[in-house]
Image (cartoon, rainbow, N blue to C red; front, side, top):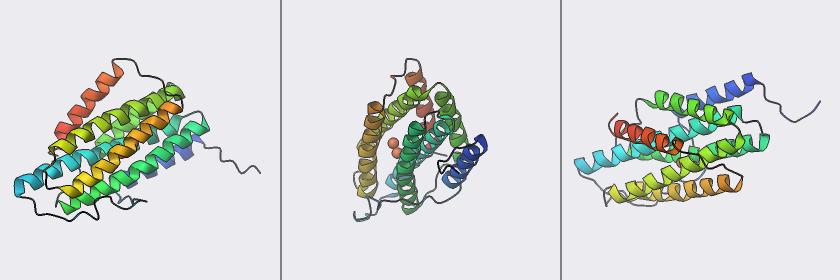
Length: 214
Ligand SMILES: [Fe+2]
Ligand SMILES: [Fe+2]
């Protein structure tokens, strides 16, 4: 009997369901240490704490969406190598997800209540992009990672100056996202035509303004 694993549609669905549950309801575990760990905690005033928590909640939602996008794309990817690359990217995003969740707890806050909704929407977008073919899949990865990288840069500028722990996490995430984009480019990503990048930017703007509060 062959040892290579041919995944049936049911296997793929079960993989996706498992990821959705652990992302939205579980407590995903990072493989790398939290980059903020060695930075001393400072007491933030109430306004700063709330602002930092709002920004970290947005980043946590971003990582929920990244999981869902990559798992959705992997579920429909035709080429096993592309599928593997997408699953590997999702694994690295799990570190980001766990670090953001840690920081939200430290800031005495919580993840977005709408996470099941963000996950479902991103999964659907990922699967739709994936159905168009593997070059598109990777093009989507590049566009997503570039947009996330830009918004992390923005958050690094607007986080309270004293919040070194959140900053350390975001700096590492930003470097990781840039590398994810470069890998996808090297693997043959197609450049997404307008209006797709514009629509993605609009959707993420909406997500950010909701997730800051809810
Ligand atoms: Fe990430
Ligand atoms: Fe990424």
